[in-house]
Every structure is written in structure tokens, then in C-alpha cells.
Image (cartoon, rainbow, N blue to C red; front, top):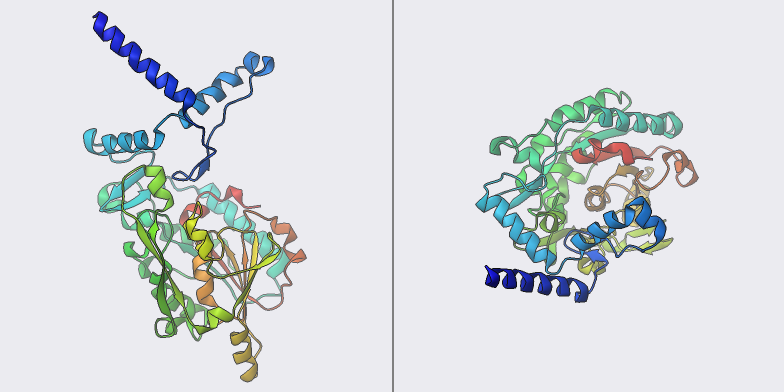
Length: 372
């Protein structure tokens, strides 16, 4: 008994010493979030109890070998305890998805209301061709057949569209499949969007959208991509490849990020070594980005037509598909109303005959209260 107590005391001493000498980290690259830091000790924090709560969060976030222990826990949850998910994440044949459930009717209504306000304030009488599309969740192609809760995103798209009589619905579910998504990330793969672009092309009357397969070349950006679900699930999954579609005109396209107040590249290779390599596409999330294709403008001029422009209201999925619209549009304006007040749009955009597409992932429409 005495020997056991000595061993337990030694283990406790080693763990405690490791906690104090282990260097703190500010960010978890795996989880893509900031980690809790040592809270400030003062009388007020001690009296109101916030110090102990913050200190507990600090110790959990800064525990030595935390990522390795998270992986061990995840493997035990799945393999030893036979749990079907870990923190709402589940894995099937190497694909990791997040449970998207239940259906949030209030959020869908909120999204429709916000889009309606944008239409009434800026689009009505100025822009005739307006479209809405909901991008299916990866779980749509995994959940039902593997006994995970889910809802019909086709129904979500229909419900959203029913409150947007001014817009045409562009359905995507039947034109996508599981392999269109990254295994360890929530996003779709740009190189797999050729069929999706054909759907957009047919409904939006685009000349080149259906020809992208013949026009473009597929290149590799990196073979060392771990998506957002890789870190959140803590599962030891293999790296993936980020590929991208390019053609001669892309090199001549000019992108401008209004937050940074500077020109940026359409494909940003420096982002591949950052916290989220998916930011390779147009730099990732930003309130307002414009991309211009002088070649498309010249083609329209030579044909005696007005160059077509697109306003794309989007979430993070829009970053990778926006470049593909440049085959038909002389200018694409990407708007993310999570990061800018929708009431201020006319301060940055002159609404005058552009095509307009509201394009959002199902998970965003199911949690749309971040829209401003």
C-alpha cells in the first residue's frame, strides 16, 4: 500500500512539474482556435469566482502533450467504447463529418429575412437576375445510411426559396456526391466542381461554365493538407491534396481585398503554410473582395455586348468557386455579410444590372444569426 502511494505521489509530482515548466501556446493549429491563457490574479477575480473558472480552462488548454492525449481519447471513444461520434464528429471510411441536426427553422427564416432586406434595399429595380442556392453538407451523403441524425437540405433549399420569390432556385444536391468534399474538411474540392458549374451555367445562362473541363488545367497546390475536422476530431488521418483549376485568363485577373486595402492573388500560395490552407483560394474569409477578368470584358466588347458582372453573397465555400465564374464574368464581387453590415452595401457597391447569387452552405443557413 505504501509503495502504491509513493508511485501515485511521484506521478502527481511529475505531472505538476511538467505543467509548470511546459511552455504555454497561444494558438492550437490543430483545432484552429486561441487557447486559454493564465488568468490575472486579483481580489475581484477571486471574489467573483472567475479566476478559478478561467484557471480551469487554462489548465485544460495548456496541459502537456495535450494533442497526443486528445488523439488517444478519440481513438478510445471510437474503438474501445464503440461510440458513434466524438463531440458531434463522426468518421466513415476516412471521411469525417459533423452532425448537422436538428433543422433550425428560425435560422432559415432569419436568412430569408436578411436576404429579403438586401433585395428591397438594393436589388429591387436594379438587378433582375437573382439566384439562390444551398450547398449540401458532406453529411448529406454519409449520415442517413450510417444511422446518424440529419435533415434534408433539399427541403432547406426549398423552404429558403419559398420566402425569396424574387430569386430562382439552383438545386445542387443531385449533382454532387461524397467525393466532391475533402475527407478531413467541411469544404468542397474545387477540382470536383465542373458538374456543379454546368448547373449554374444552364440556369444562369453562362456560355463557358459548361466548358471548363476543356478550358482548365488541374494543378497541385499542396499534398500536406489537414482540414478543420482533422484537428477537431483528433484522429490520426492522412494528409490530403489541395488542387486547383487554372487557365490562361486567371493570370490576368486582378483581385482586391477591401479589408486589406490591397490587390491580392486569386490563388495565394503563401496561405498553404498558414493556419487554414483552404485560404489558398482568394485568401479565405473577407468582408468584400472584387475580382476582375479583363479578357472577359474584352470578349464582350468585341461582341458588342455589355460585360457581365456577378455579385456573390457567400460564406467560405464561395472562395473556391468564385474563380470559376471568371470564365463568364468580367467582374465578380464577393460579399460576406458575416463581416460587414448589409445596410452599408451601397457604400461599396453600385447595384446596376449585375447578376446576383446567394450561395451558402447548409450549415451556415442552419446557423445564420451571424449575418449582419
